[in-house]
Length: 269
Length: 269
Image (cartoon, rainbow over all chains, first blue to last red; front, side):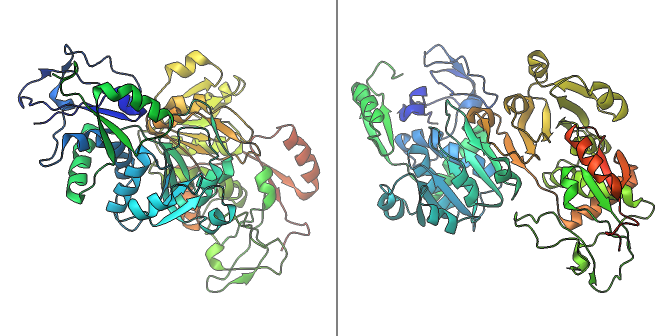
């Protein structure tokens, strides 16, 4: 069985992975950081070798999926898969929107397409149009400040996955949703977002959010990605490149995830 | 068949009713204002006698329910019943919160109790404690500014029906909701409400809203209220009292709905 380490760095766009054969019958000492439980209380873990991880927190990586592919799926893939599954949006024929095309957003497009959805990428500028439509397979591309385009697409989407991690207006998103549509927030933003109550009351729309997913959903998601042949766009780096990687992250210069191969470093078990 | 008029005035806390025998087989000329459809587009109706109302917009009032009781239920009762039904919250054993004890809120307490819920009334002050607990049958009373009380009740409610029609903080409500809890907004507020994204992401909580309900739900709700013996607290007035009623409304001096008996007035068919 392979174990993939997904460290806190992953939240900033860097995934660290290592693989390790684990006994299937007992818990083992191993360094593993679970980012957060659903209760919102951070675990007391770390990546010290002294941390004991119960096997219920160990996921099986499907045969044939490389660890460097599995690593970012454990965050970006699961973050998108979990709410689509939970809210019953994992059926074909739906119309979805992906707001923001970063690490989570690009997996959002791929997973939603693999679920059989008509996918609109919504972005603040026109810069990622080609990437969205030609490389990721989105069906439509909408610039959020394009009032006419937004109005034309009003009341058309079953859901929007909102990956934007900074303050942004919710009105365009809410207006794009159809009756009972869901705006699913995934960006931890350190200032409040605003909305007008009639924007949710009329059409019974929901503003909700999601944070990672369950262990069960993690294994389901990996199987789903394996079955559908989905991969994350990654750049594999070695440990000594981490500082440069962080500098590039600050400049938004990665498509879409750095994966750090810790083999040979002190983190390597 | 009885027809109950529910006029726009009702939105301001005044219900006007009249009853009229209607043919069951054809549409009839009759004055009826539907406040709004779910699309948010106001109907072009009025209460002129020349307006034609299709029978699909006519509801059957259960035998034995008085028109003055049916009238406010068509707004306050339905406003609460519809989302509880839609979101699958009409089963017993849930824990609900009612924020704001006005015309809608007091029916919220009664309907939620009749569904078998443990009901907490949440209010900005202590003023309505006795009313909530002793007259309306709520189980608990929480002052929203009581930090300790709110913290003690954190993560405990399946839903909160928020009837407050002015800007108010959502943090206390969101913190009271448990995993997958729903904050259901019912107040049309002319300035934005704010929230922090982690407040919905962690615990996958939803901010949603609802506006009136369907014709099917209207009949269901009336049957439900009849079966459970629920009545709205009303003050029946005559047409010539309307100006005084409005003055009293401005002072919040009505518990909880004025119902205007139009018999003998120009509105009377």
